[in-house]
Image (cartoon, rainbow, N blue to C red):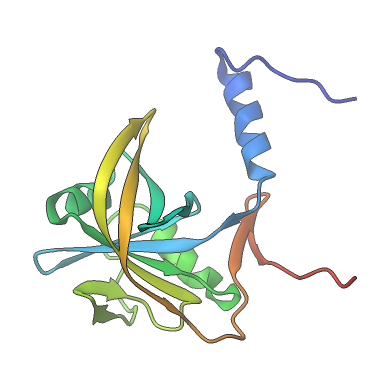
Length: 170
């Protein structure tokens, strides 16, 4: 039998919530933006499809993020949905601080930094921002979307490690 912690207060409750959320499988993407000529990017697992008409996504970024500040200024961002073989790239962009693009190839697409060999690419314009705890949720309208190679399996994050999805055989 498992025990539950009240999420109203305390470090134990916060850890319980972290543990539960670690059990949720999430896709992995690198969100990118340009601030003048300066490149910004960070790994996220909190993004999802929001609407089909118009096509929209939501992305959650830490309120202290330099990337978030750059996106607020430009009103645009790129979403590089990573493939199963890109865990190293996800780790590079997950670390704090500048220099994430050092040694990483990229190309401009729709005026945004695009990473090679991603499973999918979305360029988006921000329609709104919602403050949510220590994060900000971007509500962004997709202006371009493209699949990578059809054989690419998605990179996922589960139980604090990277992996991929394997379809069930029925």
